[in-house]
Amino acid sequence: MSDLPPLSQATLAISAGRTNSGNSLAPALWASSTWESNGLDDAHHRATSVRHGDFYSRYANPTVQQFEHAIAELEGAEAALAFGSGMGAIAATVLALCSTGSHIVAQRQLYAGTLAFLQGPCQRFGIDVTFVDVATPGAFSDAVIPGKTMLVIAESPSNPRLELADLDELGSIRGPFTLVDSTFSTPLGQQPLAYGVDLSLHSATKGIAGHNDATLGVIAGEQELLDEIWAYAVLHGSTPSPFDALNALRGVRTLAVRTRQQNESARSLAVMLADHPACVGVHYPGLSEHPQHALASRQLLQYGTVLSFEVPDRTAAGSFLDAVAVARCATSLGGPETLVCHPATSTHASLTPDEQVATGISDGLIRVSVGLEETIDLLNDFEQALAKASAG
Ligand SMILES: *Cc1c(COP(=O)(O)O)cnc(C)c1O
Image (cartoon, rainbow, N blue to C red; front, side):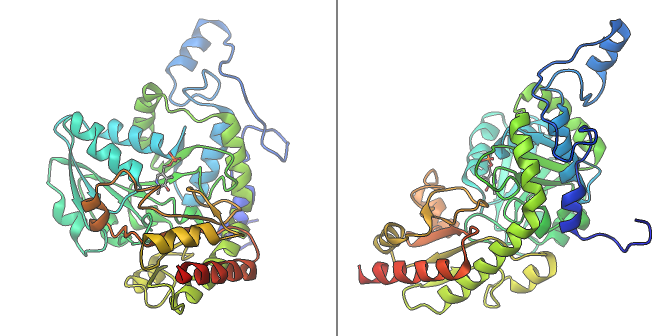
């Protein structure tokens, strides 16, 4: 091995997370919630160790740890910590690092659950949040209040309009912890930690697990910071299921080939849509006309598996969703099936009309999670559905 140049991410994804399973090629499923101890000293050691894998599964579980090791390796991180969902990761991280009187800077363009958490429970607990525009240079750092801001939260590419946070800018912020929700790019699409960002977060429910059969979240970063978050997470209780960690680790093995295919189809769809008379706007960082294409080319290793586009109004959007025959109408993303949804009435239905306007969620906006169908079949499906949508 030592004579080889550094391995590519796709190859690392095959070897990562092979602890705790002996010589088995497939990861072992440790379904146990508890482990036997041998005498008081051993019991005390298990109960008081940080992230001891053989004590009680809310503290740590060997199958979950294999998944965590895999993600840490792909993110270039010292460690990773998994949760029962992406929201579990967000809620536990915020509550581990912030107290009443703390201040958070977050972008306005967020996954609706994250936004609702920052506006609801955080405000209720006296954690103040300043929302900024993700694409405005300097917006995050300008909103930091020295001594008071504990956390800066970015989501890049953002849901559902694929706007980017400048990772260089985030990584250079001193004082508060910085977190990037990197769900839309997966660990193979960008490496926030390499820019000096403290925490990279994923809803592993999406591209990482990749088959719509697991719900879990994960953060990656420095060991010491993760140990601190873990100490709170054990009490928060958003613990991942070992079954879901097993499915997610299986997803990691094929992440590179899946995202490669999905990226290729996403790009083809974006190019087709950009030229289509029934489509009034396309959002995909891989298009040269995307306002942040230069930034995308600098910091993204893959432009992404999700795009969004706009038809003139809600009626046309409804007709398009009714007309697709290969794509399916559902929320979520990163799975084998191409999914289309209308954010204004589904993923972002909890936003007020003003918030929808402020974040660009128009009545004609359609989000597409590109799946693993053959590209040509998706292009044909979108062509025929657009024809029906523009016929009214
Ligand atoms: C889905 C998603 C989440 C929440 O993850 P869950 O696993 O559904 O809890 C957070 N952020 C982004 C960007 C997401 O797409």
